[in-house]
Image (cartoon, rainbow, N blue to C red):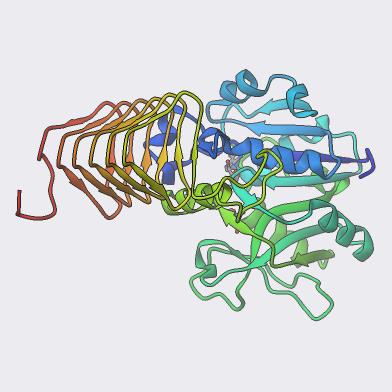
Length: 357
Ligand code: GDD
Ligand code: MG
């Protein structure tokens, strides 16, 4: 990739759908397969030969700089541009305009796990000579995304953000190639949505926005369900990441973790650094953050267990998010989208979904 391509990663969102985990860390910094989620995306950007990367921060901005510094550990030259008040996706792009030196700017939503070769998206942009190129993927239910119909030549004909009545299953995958001058046209100094304002207005002016459509791995990590699936896919090698040495198999146990006798770890489970898994516990698609403990005989399925949290003996935790340092008493049952706030203690047998204690 020529040095004339720069990247911007938007990481300023509050991550509300992942609360309470995002009360203490911004969404892109939550651990997935042993690294902050953002590390997987930054490694893909580096792999495409791009070294100049701007992070557009707002919520908990300092966390990114504390972790990545100048980016040299990833082979990147990282700079940070912070919005004091969140400016939205379009406002966040406009806000970095003065820091852009390249003519071609790749913009990434910071919460997407993808397998697309970034160079191919830039190539499509060059070949079509469009002013903006959008990476699109096909999904079963487009309603939670930006729906993007195209014509036979691959030109974008409309941009319909989160519509209840999508005309196609092609959606915005959250990676854009912009000619730098177009970014300069975005209104400055106020919140702007790139999806609801910038793209529709460019199309209304008859400007050329092109599509790069492919079937590579793709997942937005913004909900607990997707976060758990994406993390498991990284562990099992279904989602590629240059930040992982190799696909690890059914589970990944990080340094200093302790796994008791007869414990079963499957479904892409991750056991964080210094975490403890008791004898006979069963973890299936579990994401256990550093320092957490799962006591003997507990069952954790498709759930996230926050930093230093505890799941007591014989408890059942399924499709649940447990906040940092929360403590779930022995034989509790937490199911179907339950969310436990940080520090909360639930006593033994304190919550159950059945009557046989
Ligand atoms: N700098 C900055 N400022 N970044 C922001 C702001 C802001 O005010 N608001 C959101 N972001 C960042 C988030 O951190 C995230 O990385 C990205 O912008 C997208 O925001 P989400 O909140 O995750 O949006 P979404 O998932 O509902 O929808 C977006 O992504 C979908 C694909 O994953 C849209 O772009 C959809 O059209 C798209 O289909
Ligand atoms: Mg998202």
